[in-house]
Image (cartoon, rainbow, N blue to C red):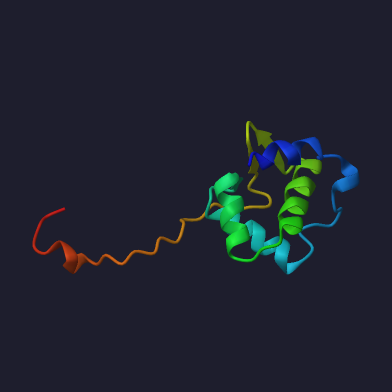
Length: 106
């Protein structure tokens, strides 16, 4: 997919929204990215789309952050700084429980 390259090519101020994150959807994008190390990658983009976030909102967040110096392209990734994104532990859903391991010491 290599979407970061496409975002970088379009990272001109004319594509950026000046007062962002301005909508709940922009904040939802940044919240999701926090669980991905505040990095937009092919995987985090796929996760964002899978939970119903609009591609246009994701693109606008990435372009606006780059235009305002709050994100930088690093290879095929876009990395957001701490002024707009907080890294958090990802939610890991597992069907395993401690009792599944019996009395073994881990």
